Length: 261
Image (cartoon, rainbow, N blue to C red; front, side, top):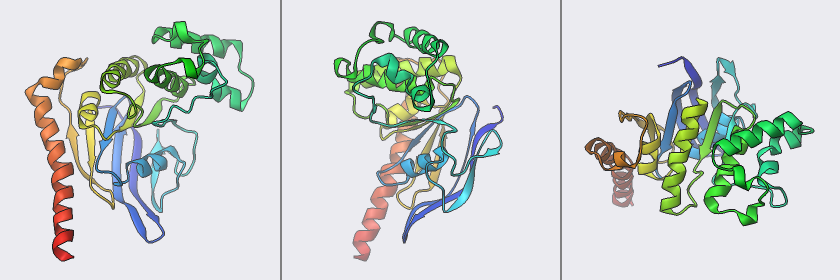
């Protein structure tokens, strides 16, 4: 495994009297794909906001390539569940939006963005506006926007959560292709256990609030992956372990609260 690309060390987050994230340590290697799962409200998005620099933690640090980036936004690519495309801009204009916001888009930037988009199946849609695109196509444009200007760490926060199951599986396979060719380091939040396992090298399972890492599962499934892996014994075993960690612990906490009430 290569040198750590992203290191989260001793991170904690409180909002007033609420402890949203307990002490959390995580190291992600360059080029690694790591999924983060857990029950609702366990701090997955809080952790992402801290890694992105949008949120400064109450305690702890984040380093990327050995540089302290704690509370410093703009060092990683960050894609949310909503595509947030600008309705009045074409697909190509949305992909180059980052450059548009920071200054004039050069011809070279447009050409590079168009080539990348065409390579990943968007070549016929560069002049289309968001209202004329399917949900999956819009998400592809949003991901291309995240990739467009060489952020080699990407945080993807439930990017496929609003898609139907078939489109979602298509997008997962498409994302694996993009990731395999770009070599980006990816942290991926999802509520879908199958999705987490199918995509990742490791799956970080978080506990109910205050969020903490309860276990990290190594996904020892061969790459490249296709849908056939979803029905293998090893996939099923990994899924069972993740289900036990998430729902078993959550149910135990619920039962304890009911007993003490």
